[in-house]
Length: 84
Image 1 (cartoon, one colour):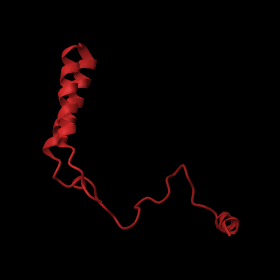
Image 2 (tube, one colour):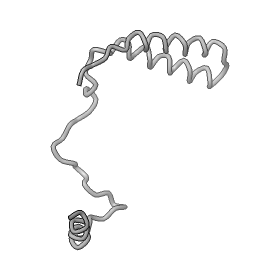
Image 3 (cartoon, helix red, strand yellow):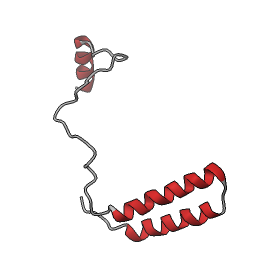
Image 4 (cartoon, helix red, strand yellow):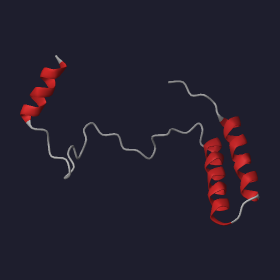
């Protein structure tokens, strides 16, 4: 998939967030400034790979959570029959 250079768009969004933050107070201003920082970070990190923080494994380590038991074989067969 081709990368589309969004630096100008990110720069505009960061600038807009900082302008809006200047008109606000308290937590709302802080949140808007953080959003501007995120856009500014996207400008700097555009050419970096996005998978640096992720570990790609071949198989799911925890296929079933405790809240969801594994599917019963008869249910699996019933679903397969319905698909046919």
